View 1 (cartoon, rainbow over the protein chains, first blue to last red):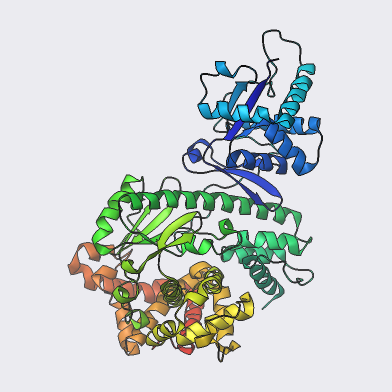
View 2 (cartoon, one colour):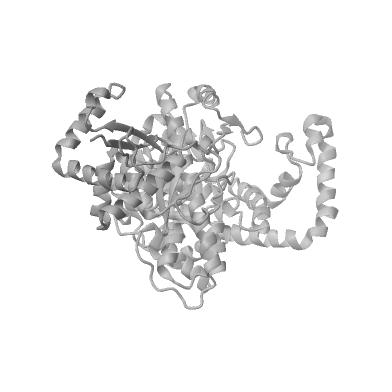
Length: 187
Length: 407
């Protein structure tokens, strides 16, 4: 068996905020040159983005967090996480690293820390079981490919669109005015 | 006070204390309320309590309000981030830049991003002024030449943050209470301390000095166009958070020496009655005789002002008149002399369309005549507007007198 275990982390320079019932990701520092506005997201995406902003997370950890937070089943959590990763990858908000579960020795391109984390994650029987189930579910939903193990994120990363940003909402984001409050006087 | 204004104050108090607002009047004019909030630049602060208070906010306004709140959140977050990057550069160069108001006061709000900061005021030692300017330039800031002057270097970052770098806080040519101010005694950079601010730490003044600076800043604006409610919210929250650390005897003595005791009392009455300022150590020196007689006209003036008195053209126009009158009254001048000073201005006070005399000093008398003619004939065409401006100025002078600020 050769499924892949992915690690996700938010790129630096992004912060989430809630305004009323809307959630958004705000670029700061150098990211302001890449994104001229905010990225509107839904509550689940905000929850997941905050997780990967706090620290790097493995996909089983994120699935478990989703299930704990919203009391949803495996397939719903999987769907939500897949959509999140796809959209965030499209918007270039995430850094991901994928490791082979069964052949860690071949992961020479990864840091020792990652290898160690993976080992620890796989020692957790619950996570290992969940990962196997997900791998099976994923494999069942795809055409078999004898040359490749299943991945939690079937879509390869897409090119960045720095000008457009991305929305995890079906409707277009509100036109936040980046140049707004600029009175000359008075802090 | 109409319903929209009453509701505005209810929502503002709820916003700064993160609590559900009291019931609002029925059939409220939400557009008027939003406009008032925008004038005082607290529309972002009021968004959450407005949502909580009433399902009656018109849908279109609500959408616009939410977009505005999101835009404010984004710009404020980004400005805060840029400022901390700049402050880190100051630290690296071992230059101490004291942050006034801004991110220090933002931290006191339940939703710090919604407290709008349009620029950052930094104070440095006189000897560090040139070094600080060079550092800002190295950080990508570009000077706004028209706004800079002797004691203040104004610059803007490409990301939008505007910084006002000061080597002193108040104009040394000021009269009245500002002339009695000994900045080197009250606000030396060496008195600053490291403190928590929104988004990180910074150098700032200890609570007593910072509260006094806020009071002086409001008083300084009182003698021109006035100031808005956001400054009052800042002060009220600051006293709630830091009141126990302030030496109120010292503070009251400074107010007394600067003839600002009555103004301060009116401000405390306003904070307590309309912004629910909590009881605390401040009452040891200012708790007695807090009544509405001074606070009411002050509140009316503040409500009328918008941020730093820019709510109406009349208000803006009245500023010069109020300032000159204040300058004259507090300097003990006769009315005739004040008028003469208003017409026969000095070369360094010239502004368009009299700049020719600035370039050629011999033309100064011509500029005075030009000025007289302009006021006598051309400006008469705008008599209504000027009249309204003068009426505002008269009312404001009466208020300054009532608050004892003309002494």
